[in-house]
Amino acid sequence: MRRITLLVLVWAVALGALGLAQEIGTRDHPIIWVFPPSTNPAVIVDIATKIAADIGKMTGLFIEPRVMPDYAALIEAFKSAEGDVMGVPTTDQYARISVETNFKTTPRLAAVRYGYPYYFASIYAPRDKGFTSVEDLKGKVWIYNDEGSTSGYKLPKMFFDQHGITFSGVVKSGGHVNSMVALLEGQGDFCTGYGSPPLPPDWVKDTMPGWRWEYGMYPELWVWDPVANTLPSDYYRGACVDLRRAVAKLGTYGDIWDIVQKIGIVDTIGPMPNDCIAFSPGFPKDIQDRIVEAIIEHIHTPEGQALWGNENFYEWKDVEEIDDTYYCNYRALVGLPNPPTCGE
Image (cartoon, rainbow, N blue to C red):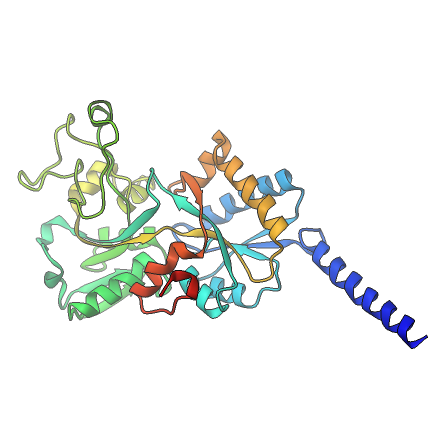
């Protein structure tokens, strides 16, 4: 009798655990999809809500999007998750989440922007200040978005410390676009934020198939002529798709070329792997697979492109499948431990 009772209890516990696992993605236990504030929080709330709704319809899962108030809050959401949180952590956020969850968080998809699986930090400054190197920034006022931002703060701070650069003051803007706006309005001497490879004019694609800008090349190729100190001619002018374009979309400070004439790039820091779609520890693998498949399909539709690629969202043009080893080099760069899978 005791043996039968024990078996009944074991089955009850097993069925209870199964029931709990099945609850994820239901109305009573929705999946929580967390997003960093990044560029324009109001736009991100709107677009994240639409994307989550589309992915929910495609998978039959109930998904609740939440735009975090800051970068630290997103990290905490992963650490306190009970197998029901997915998110879009930045590079540095994911690196720290992976360490703080004992490498049990699972990255599945990395962003691809304009054909590149990496990005970098750029140091932007008014051209009329005449800054030509990081040494010129000593004693100046630094504008950045948030201490949790990879390209806005983490990597630049490490870079400045390595070069012994200190400042007379800082301005914390709260967002990438806000940083550029503050710079244009004279609230500081320079700002840091994400950088993106410049795109060549169409004739380059036609005459030099396969040519592409790679990190280490002149960061304003096709965008600014450093010899003539002016914009390139129409024939040689490509496209600027970095933080300056995001600000130009506001329509308040002129078009992109007005802003490029005012604001240049002093230096870049990187490269670093793009941000990702990651799942918290304990998130069921089969449900991960359904969501990943839906996101890949969604981002390739016209509707998905318009949402994921929005300049005030995250400018994802595509995704590629990854695992945690994608971030091995970045963790080593910033002094974080790596798991054995990194081969160190």
